[in-house]
Image (spheres, rainbow, N blue to C red):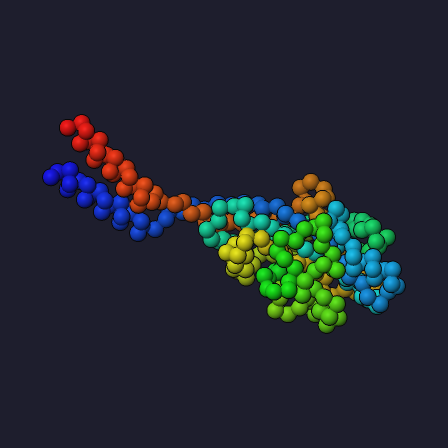
Length: 272
């Protein structure tokens, strides 16, 4: 009789244990970029230039260019991919994306020299804006590779029509708009805030891959070029995503507790 009462009590505890909320702990991580590259576009130039720019793959370059030039419509957009699935994240509490400007703008193997513009995020002379690549039909897949991505292989978020329309040069509705939410301190450009955190959580709930796109929205007529360190550049300057997040610590399952309970009761019976 005593064994039965003990068994019933322990089973009730085991089954009720599942209803308790999971314990959690806070964590901080500096997540380095998985893939990063500059996508170049040209129109109105020579046929050879158009073919070279639009098919250019810059995955091995030490720099990520953001270029905005008229009258030949040369453009360069930065793509930065992060893999959130490498961390055991339950919820993202805050995030900050950071890239470092290069002291000089090196050759990108197509343009011998780019105009070295002023790094500025003041509204009237804005040179820096960011957007998040959404997972919508027709967009560049989130698992893109820097060894294959060029303008010719980007999706609906970046097309000749979107570039011609001006503004961000990106297709409305295909990207999350973080323009005006960045900050510049010395040679570091950072993006943070609730909008970025919320968007990253949606990427976490999808497949964990998140792509941030950088643009140069207001290039000067003579050319407006900025360059940032890529993952192939100098050590210590790799694009990064600083995360403060909550890690779920699973409680023991009811099945595991019930198994321990039954083992205890059976052991007592054998001893008697």
